[in-house]
Image (tube, rainbow, N blue to C red):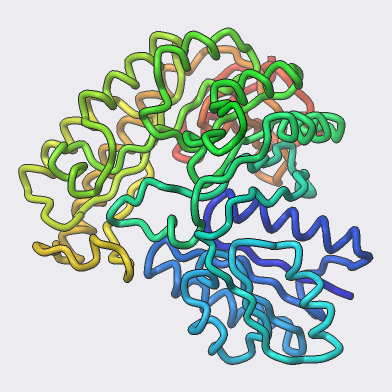
Length: 428
């Protein structure tokens, strides 16, 4: 049959979609962009705007594949199964567990088109669902999902209800997957999960993220290992001392923040203070000189006063991030924050987000400009007509002249000019 996949949301969703596409091909199916027999939409639900994006993506799939069986899986399908099942044209609704089973349901539905909803209580799931890692066509980097679920219950977040409790891929299995990716000529592995700082707490012996990262770096020394989003509590002195000896660990750490005000962090139920967070920043910079430290910030959280927002701005300047992902607060039904008093108007949320973005652009420019004139190794990506992208150990993209080399090749370049899309460079 002809299968079409679409994905919304985070890197975990992206990993799961590529795994499902691999499994579909192993069952003899072909992948297409339109005219499919089956369409599988992997949904996101982290914000209310994410739910609207699900609907737009669904309508696009239906328009391009008018006769196809339509299946919804992922976080929106998990948290809102009745709403998902009630959408016109949707045949199958699965959640965030037993992803491989959706393929068999879709095959059956092509022949016997009956609505089915197989969503179960994800918080009863205690076993990590292992899916095959793989490299997407035209890419040099691959995702490796090592963890699922979250037990933090931040007041603004629906993800613990969509993904369940912490579940981890055994360390030996993760190493095996990494070796397979290395054999497939992958140049970089991005270690991802819903909350990778909790990796291993459910496994025998409780190996942690430090153990996993060291094992991966050792197992595939020719492949760069890049860690996904980290909680500050993970960045201990032991983390720095044990991992800074690996040359193939990316010099980029995404350290989740959300607010630079202690009172706001407390209302968010974040489990650190700004002082503890800044200590993590200092440890990383001491252990990994010139590293990229990037973060997330939510503006306009309920109760955020002008003074609290000013504290966040001051703290961002103190940390001097290389890049910031900025999100105006969005109410998510089913979370404690959605019914908190002292809601901030959407206009002020957006204004504050714009203010943070302006500061973020300044900090990103300054960080990148400090690299100008330096010579670094990069891996070439698929070329475009205007430039050939490449990536190094840091967070920023590198832009080379068209046809600078073969995709996947590692070359030395000199960084020459900052642009908002990346740093221009020339071959050495």
